[in-house]
Image (cartoon, rainbow, N blue to C red; front, top):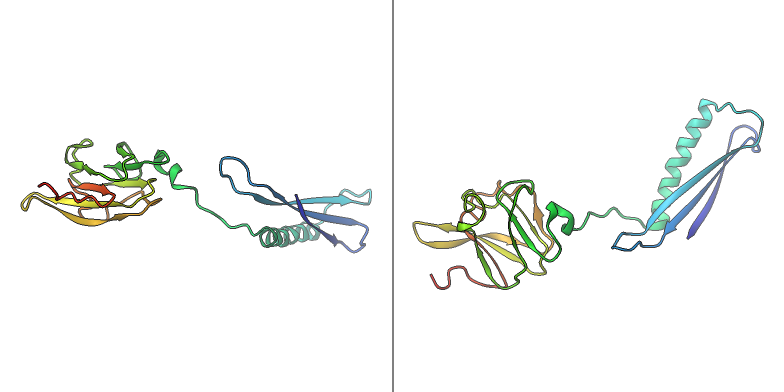
Length: 192
């Protein structure tokens, strides 16, 4: 769909060069891809000369900057982050937990929206150093607890919101260390 046409003339003689810009907006593509706005610039030389002066090149650059601004304003285009489903290779509709940072070696996945996942016997080390990275593609919060072996209780560390992710949660002391991740309001201390 053509949004607008912006003629720009450069050079000393108005008939020497004619730059035309078309701002084109494509409709939203399938698979949730957003609509895109593009500036298409055509440059026609109306004289037999093929020499492009430095001044013309600079004017073209300035026209490109102006067209980019116009395209963004006309199309209302905003930069958007990719969906959390693409983060760390975690499938849509799942909670994914990794012992390592940067989504290396997926250790736990869950589709449950009302349960606790006890981490002490999962992964390579039972999440001894806590959760290294995570992605929550569930529609509910995932509440993270660490386990205190001396008191034999789980203590709240934090909440992972729906769509939330972290490539390095090791900066948080004890985040899920040998603990549990619960959804749907389930208490990991119930039944201890």
